[in-house]
Length: 321
Image 1 (tube, helix red, strand yellow):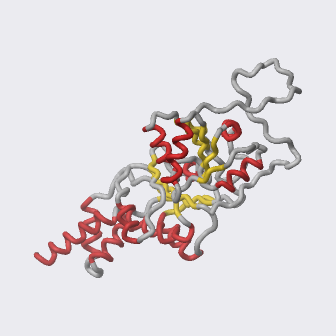
Image 2: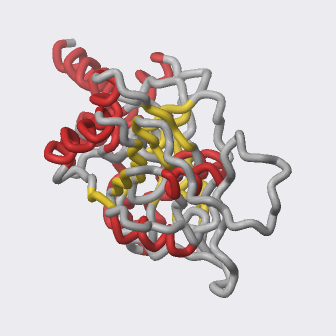
Image 3: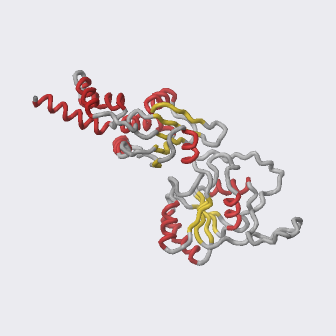
């Protein structure tokens, strides 16, 4: 569950002004009473909201929230709180809940409203809609129905973590949350072993240590960063190798806050097959195939699956020879 939004805004200040329409009279009397904001163009408006600090929201996002005919949110209480902080009036509008558990029922209703000419503003629990959240299906169906879809971009835990991780950002792959079951997680992670890019995952704090260990086993002992509490008071980016991070969090226990794991790409100069064979031949003298392959994969930073397959082949050759 997300922590409450924080803001340094003085509650005595007047509500935040909504940006005027582009065709507003530039010579209008600044002291005159501002007319109610005009409605937005019909369609779906995807609005990014803060991931921690309430001030991390754009003027366009506030304008969209003020002018939309319909507001849909993954967490209605969180959106209501955000609008109150920034002085955006809700008026007679209701905030419609839209999340994984009711998306199938809500999508036809929201699409019908858009087809009738209404503007729908969709916000996620925090950050940018459609990034690891259920909003993409609504966007897809709106596009399929020929309805306009636009975005008011802003805060994103994914991009914030990439910014401070200290790892290559010219090419990256976001993979969301790993599966929770051990076997499924291992297969999931192994599918990214040869991707020539920085990898980004979201993870639950209580599963972090196990996931880091699984990442090291599947991907090799790469440089990584665990970023948590992004934009909040206790923001932290912990940078080390995957193995070192896994050991640290296993010893310390689950951290607090939302977690983003950023992992560097595989080394450009891959370990040669001859090096792997030599290391495996030595390791197999005193360990099982599984133990030897795991030790060599971690030592050389090579994908565990391919090292295990080679260990099986070498073991068979030794028996047959």
